[in-house]
Length: 262
Image (cartoon, rainbow, N blue to C red):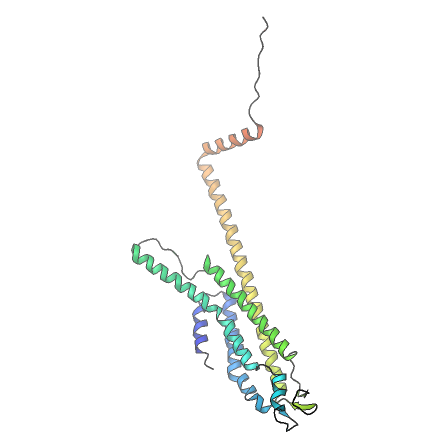
């Protein structure tokens, strides 16, 4: 399988990522894609051919293999890597949309006009939500495939021998898996790297939310400082404001009536 497309895609989104996002990309490339391409595909190889059973009953071998391995590990990991990297395409497309909108705006109003975006790749507004939703989707994909791997194969272990009682086997048949220890190691390795990617995405979401909250608090404090500076420069307006507040609290002045006796 050719992974050049995914490499180019993730390299393009790398410049829009945070520090956690760059670490995530490194983990995906070095510990998932490279290990998958270089080692995992060769370890599994033609797994159905290497799966042997101690019977010559026609069809028994195929039925037992399909029962214990409904989906190939290699194909399941390939789907996982594709689904977990495709959300990055949304970020790239969103940035491209901003750049095209900015280009049309300058063509219409001239190059000296006010820009729509100070930085098209800065995570603000809709791009911020696109980036956060892509992280949530990545976490969901990794978690789903980890569960599928556990559910389909009843765990992450590879026994050296399994017993099959499926039809058309005449009786309980012993079937043997080739290189079970090596496959167990690679399976655990892929699961652990998936969990690491989930944690990195979770920390990146916390970082983005914390940064956004700090920016909101900073803007609120700046607005208060500007309001105070304006009041200091205009003492008359401050006096009028305080007078209105005082009148509002105390209420209108009481009215007295004077009666003159004749």
